[in-house]
Amino acid sequence: MNGYFLKTTHAAPIAIYRIAMGLMLFISILRFWTKGWISELYIKPLHFFSFYGFEFVKPLGNYTYVLFFVCAMAALMVAFGLFYRAAIVVLFFSFTYIELMDRSTYLNHYYFMSLVLFILMFLPANRYFSIDAKRKPSLLSDQIPQWNIDVLKFMMVILYFYAGLAKINSDWLLSALPLKIWLPSRNDLPIIGALLSYPATAFLFSWFGCLYDLTIAFFLWNKKTRLLAYATVVVFHGLTAVLFPIGMFPYVMIVAALIFFSADFHLRLVDFLNRLFKCSPEFIRPNIRFTYKPLVQKIMLAGFGLFFLLQLLFPFRYMLYPGELFWTEQGYRFSWRVMLMEKAGYAQFTIKDATGKFAIANNNEFLTVLQEKMMSTQPDMILQYAHILRDYYAKKGFKSPQVYVDSYVALNGRSGKVFINPHVDLAKENDSFSPKKWILPMNDEIKGF
Image (cartoon, rainbow, N blue to C red; front, side):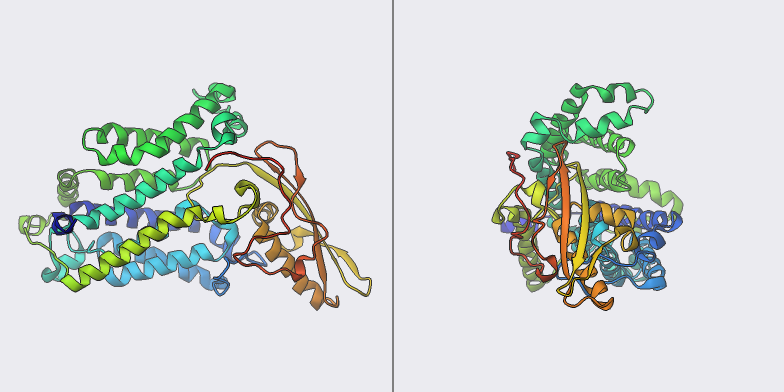
C-alpha cells in the first residue's frame, strides 16, 4: 500500500479534467442565466425550502445574480488555472450555496459536482498546463501522485455503482417502472419514437440501465475495455439527454469519464489545445515531479479516507428508517438514486385555531408550480410548508394555528393512497433525523436495495 502512495503519473489527466469541469460549470451557469431560471427559481418565489441543518442558506434577492456571476467567473478561472487555489474554493462554496438555497431544485448531479469541487480543492490541478504555472514557473510540475487521479476515478465508481445498486429492485427490474410510464410519452421522437410504446422496450432499457451503472466504471478503469466502455458512455448519456429533461448531467458525465483514459491520451489533448496557446516544449514537457511533504500527505490521505468512508456509508442510512424508502424518502437524497420513481401527489392544507377560525390554504398563493409539485410528495417539504402556513396565519390573527393536511400520493403507477396522517397537527411537529411517525405506511413492498 505504501508503494502505491509513492507512485507518480503524468499530470495531464487532472489538467484536462480541471479544464473540462470548469467549462461545463461555466456553461451550466450561463444556461441558467440566459433561460431566466435565476429569477424564476431563486428570486420570484415567496418562500424557499431549506435543507435540514442549512436553514441559514437563503437566496439573496437580486444579489443572487452577483452570486451566479461570481460562480461563473470562478469556474472560468478554474478552467484556465488562474489563481486556482482561491478560485476553486470560491467555486465550491458559491456553487454549493446555490444548490442549498432551495430543496425543490435538488438534483443528484449538482451533489456530484459539489463533491468533485471539494476534492479538487485539495489536488494540485493547477501545476500543469495552467496560467498559474505560466506566471509562476516554480509551480510547474508534470508528474503528480497517482492517487490524485484515482480519487477522481473512485468518486465516479461510487456514483455509477450505487446508482446501479439502487436499480436492483422489484419495480425497476420486474415491472420496468417507471420507464414503462415515461417512455411512451416520447413516442413522437424520430426513428426510435415508435419503439418507445412497447413494454419490451421499457424492460430492455431498465435491465440495460442497471447493468450499465453496475459495471461501466470498472470497464472504464480496465485498459482493455476502456474504449468500448467510453463509446457506451457517449451513447447511453446521449440517449438519456434526448429522452429525459435532465439538463447538463449527461454531458458532465461524458467529459468526466475521460479521467479514466491514459496519460498519453490526455497528453495528445494537451498537444491539440497547445496549437491554440503555443506554449514552449519546456512548458509542455518540463519533467518536474510534484510531491507533498510527508506530514501533509498523511493528513491528506487520512482526510480522503474519511471522506470516502462517509461516501460509502451515507447512502445506506435509509436502513435506519422504517417503511418503504421510495414512499417515505427518509434517506433518499444524497444516495445516487437517479430517476427511479414516478411520484405524483396532492396536498390540501387546513389551518384552524381554538377560537374557531378556519382556512384552507391556496398553495398557488405561496408556492411556485415546481415547489408545489415537489412538496406534495416529500414529507420533509410538507412539514416545512406547514410551518410556513403556521407562521403566516399566526400573523393573520390565528392563535396558535393548527395545520392539517389531506394528502394523496401515487407511486410508480399504483393507486393513490393517503400519505400523511390527517389527524396530526404538523404545526407542532419538528423536522429532525428521527423517523417521521406521521407518514402513513404504503402497505406494499418494493423489494431490493
